[in-house]
Image 1 (cartoon, one colour):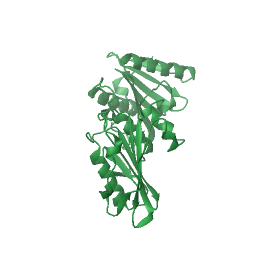
Image 2: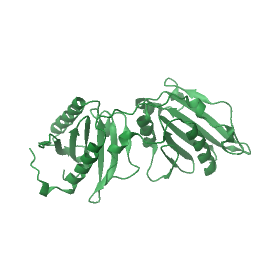
Image 3: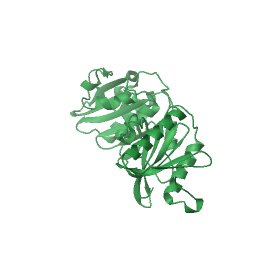
Image 4: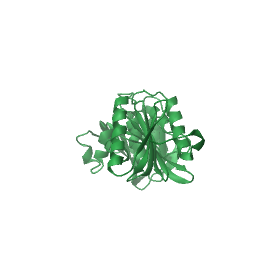
Length: 299
């Protein structure tokens, strides 16, 4: 067992305490956000009027779970754990320049957190952010954003359209997506001091590459100038969280990570050890959540 004293709290234990404090302030038992809209993505495609001189080329194409691979072969499986149900894709062309075109893809996902999860897969904190929908980013050849349970990807086909064309098309789509632009509530669990904004991700299966971490959030951070990673596993119940926690403890023990447990007077259980992939780890469980920090030199 680990003996801890308040006077000996390290920066690492203070950081995990911050996570615990923020975590306990949030609705500990709120369910995963359910999809809030049944609107068909076909109705969200903009008319040619989103930008002067542009027009829809042909008809939009709809893809389902069974046909998505024909459009994005090799990448279609990425979308399935996030509740993908439909994709509508349309090509818009600049009438004065046949080499300049824009592809608009609207993905209907299972929930708000699922739409964010796909969006976070593509997002890079170094790319310019843009306030469209719940969150978005833009560069010279693409614009992506999410809102409600829809993920939208605009990409150049041929020559890159002007920036204003990307923005106008995205705004036209966002206006047609029902619901609020607020991010999923679950993100509040990982937004704590010390983490790098824009690095939050939602993974629908095998968080950190471990099958027993079924789904959850991760984000990059820093302690004493050294990179770390925080995570929150979203289990369905306290019983499931206990099972997850125990499986991770057993895994570390099997791999020679020398995991140790400390139980506070309030019942909070903390695990400290060394992960074969993520160096030192400090992990806790509370309610239906398992959460902690990896990549520590001295857990």
